[in-house]
Image (tube, rainbow, N blue to C red; front, top):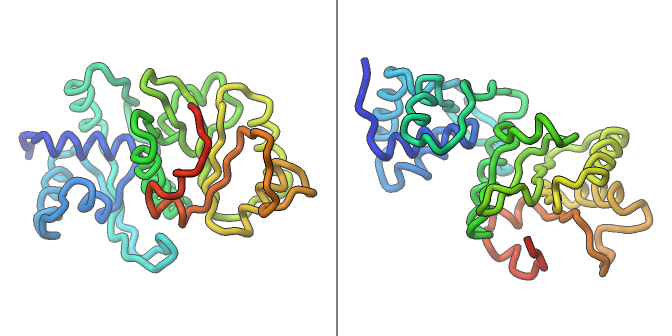
Amino acid sequence: MDIVLTPRDLGLLLDCYEQVQLSFAQIHQRHFLGRSRPTVTNRLSQLRRSGYLKSQRVGIVIHRGKAEDVSKVFQVTAKAIRSLQERYPQNSFRDAPPPLNSASLVHDLLLTDVLTVLAATWPGITARNGKLHRGAQHSERRRPDAVLLDHQGRVIAAVELELTLKSKRRYREIMLGYKMQRVFARIIYVVGSDALAKVIEQHIFGPRQLFSTPRTEPSKFLIVKLSEVLKGRDWAQNLQIVW
């Protein structure tokens, strides 16, 4: 069975490729706003049966701080990528999507929400999932969760979504790697709690500087709470950011 891909289908497939994976709810919100759930289910089933999408049943996870029935997560297939390459020849696509990691699913779904907000916060900036960022395989010591690109496709910032605490040794390795490389002018840490923010800031600035201590010197690191980012543009109004 095959189907004729509509402009909405192509937009959905491209979005699913760029975000690595999308939940049913995210697809509904981003591509079928105002349409009924059966309508979304029917079209996704057609795309899946035609070989453009593959799905993985997930069930209930903790998403945005509450239990949520994610139901299924969708990814594009190699067939879908070939269709996208034909439709968007100016873009560079991988031959296959990165593998799904069930252990990091909540993190990855939240990352999609964060990148959507960041792209809307700074018009002209492209937010790209780090798994699709080819530069990380060559000149960069650290593969970030995501990168921000300017209108010419140049990397201007790394984005890290931090939801759980890492070991001190791991933080030292990460911070040292970021401080020594010049690829990223800014590193934006989006953190799930104040406690995480304090730990990360102490690893960046040293144990004598607390999260609540004002700083006047410029820093390539920016720490912001996840809850503030997900509220929308207001969190960035007072930030002095020059790309």
